[in-house]
Image 1 (cartoon, one colour):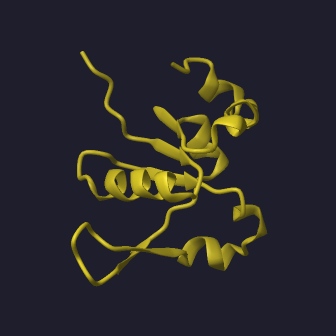
Image 2 (cartoon, helix red, strand yellow):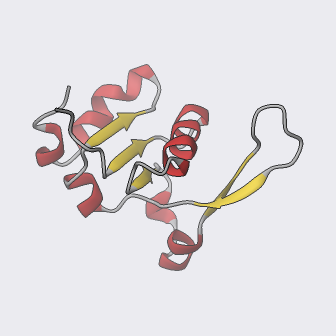
Image 3 (cartoon, rainbow, N blue to C red):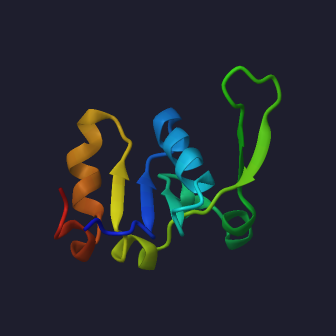
Length: 107
């Protein structure tokens, strides 16, 4: 039996992080997908709630805007999956910053 992934956190706002975020957040079988970005501590509460990103689908010419759901502490602690989309030399430090409960069952 597979565990339902109803809370996914993507760490990293680079090309790969945003690509994974976009596709997972658009899939209807995932309840909550959020992004943990390095700059989100600098954003106001209004900016966090109203954030958007633009995505241009493959072989399309127009970008579309989508809402961006920044990860909060509770989402990270209760995540079913955390995807580390950071440079290889940042993996260890990113992993150490995650709350203990979410890293206990890391694979």
